[in-house]
Image 1: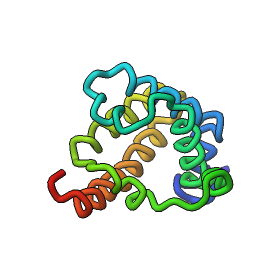
Image 2: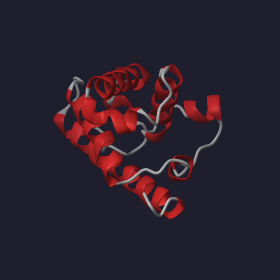
Image 3: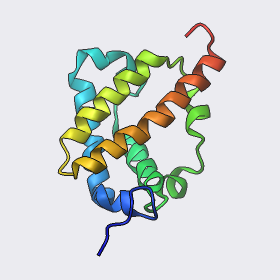
Length: 140
């Protein structure tokens, strides 16, 4: 039996371990962000209590990876770049976010091919967020 390609159906969601795997990723992501002083510029954009941020990111990733659309069910629709445009997010912020995510992905028991795929996919909205924020905050 051939494994479906990542990005097809729920193959990526299943490769991540479903919602439990995504929650582990998100927990590691925010723990690393809290621990790394270099991540402070991005961490400061989040509330002190990360419970809501953790749930929103895990729910978003669930639907984004082909699983249940938990974010829409709980929080409604979201346009990722336009939502993030409220903050002056620049390329350095995106790089910090992606570094924390890369390090969190590395902690997961995932196939290396899926880990590489996921990080490449996450770089796309990260870049779009920078573009949307720079259009709204030209000085950023």
